[in-house]
Image (cartoon, rainbow, N blue to C red; front, side, top):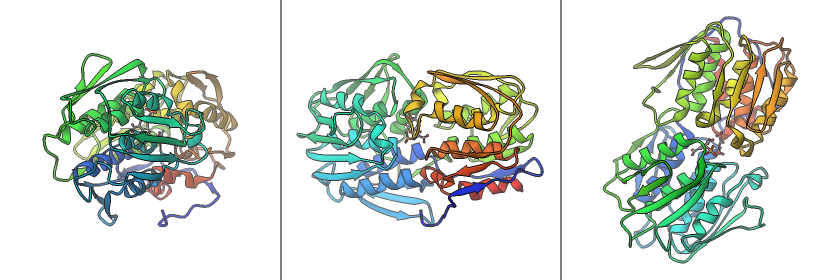
Length: 434
Ligand SMILES: O=C(O)C1=C[C@@H](OP(=O)(O)O)[C@@H](O)[C@H](O)C1
Ligand SMILES: C=C(OP(=O)(O)O)C(=O)O
């Protein structure tokens, strides 16, 4: 992302006045990466796309797979398609670099299995610690030779496919990441010519359910019948019924959480435009947690507005909105009474071990934090500014920025890690000054 440069450390200045602003955040990462895959299979244009490291590795990988991609970032529009109709995946061999993008790794591992070919997917050091074995095991059930190159259950991943999936029934575990299931649903679209449905069963609990619902809702928007059958089975009709002519991406609700939370911690008012509760993104419900803490939440045509006020601690199950755990962790430091976050053990497998990282950095800032396997309890104490580490995790950086709105001398180390999903975050954050 050449447009932005970042210092090694960023010293934050607290706000002089509570903000009273309306902001626009970039397109959703999760919707962009799904839409790029669907566009690649159906020759389509994605509008309002997010440009960030996670979407750039997706676009670069699609090119390496032989898809034709035209980018017009002045209009945030990307067009993707196949050069011919003989193959579903144009290149029969490719080496893909997924950086630290979980969605790119998991969606493309599944996608490349639908055609004959040999593919390798690898990423940064942390990506080599992020699990993918449950997805590989599911692909082996339909005759795909899918394995972790070093036997670690993590990337690098090798996928050797004969001629797509043999069979139409798979079972996948869902307790580590929902992205395995979303990848299989996306790939199922073109996986079969011989069956009328593909059935994917979920073995055990499923985390991050709203992301699976997002995948299914997008399939419907793209003319594919896919949906739940009971609580633990997904059925996909692997035949297109037609495609949209162009597809528009919503603003990113996880990115919006930092701005709504800014209103909460400062007692100000912040509107994030372009989002409402009918969003495809579960993270839009983060505002309900702020509502429980004492904020007033207002939804109108322009977007969702949060009005801050005195905050009280809450006890919440965040399994459905786990990308906002760290946002809430920062807000909790400014509430009356403790906040307990539950049922998010799976966030230990993300860009960093997010439970451990959040506990460590909030303690450095002065909060009292009790860590459990599946979450944490944050008890507010007097805070003092210090240099905080971000663990190369964009959400650590953007969440800790909230503390810097109120507490002097907060310094963010490696602020450039925001580029994973929000390269212009620091510029937009300055808009809180009015
Ligand atoms: O499907 C998706 O787009 C995502 C699913 C979630 O991952 P998990 O299912 O691993 O929790 C979320 O954390 C990630 O940022 C995006
Ligand atoms: C966990 C995240 O991303 P991913 O799993 O797609 O790398 C995230 O954006 O917070």
